[in-house]
Length: 235
Image 1 (cartoon, rainbow, N blue to C red):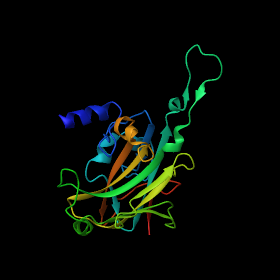
Image 2: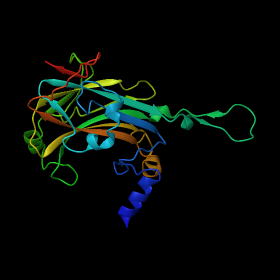
Image 3: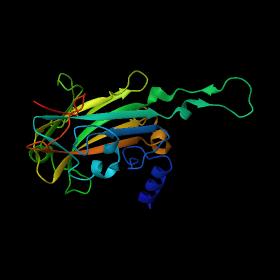
Image 4: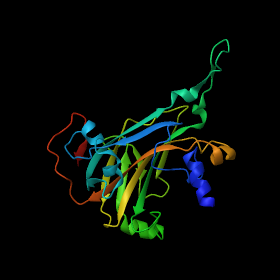
């Protein structure tokens, strides 16, 4: 009965504390999107988007070779209708409300155990021994590290909407290979739960999100073309 109430609440506005995150986009906050070269042609274009969520969210996901970087495009669009409110027939300017103060874009990286119902590992040690390693960089030259799956304290980065924007591109690096029962999951969220009162967490809007699976393999897939802005890079 409680589970049913949670699902119903998540469907009609979300349930905080992580229970309101469902694959369908909730456009009350906006739209978030992760894009990558899912057909391995060396270009990041509309053909990759045509694959839909199937390639992005089914194992093995996007395959990245060790010592290889894959460009991943990030897009976060806030819902403009949430920023203004006017009463029909009332004189004067519309009432404005700026909700950016409690909203943030979040990039999250975590290893996933495909043999567990919730994707969890029994321990951090098991996770590290089985899942391999992946890093996410701000730039293709690997000067600014954003996320590292081997570091439990570096798996989440936030950009508060009131003062910053997420980057248009990040670069995913394959460091070491995990076993066949594991993948990496990169998730982009637009969320206001972290800075909301408890009542908003329980009955407020759920985050909109998009996610992509990644697998690290010993060697890269062959890409026949090269984009002007490197979509794939070996080092």
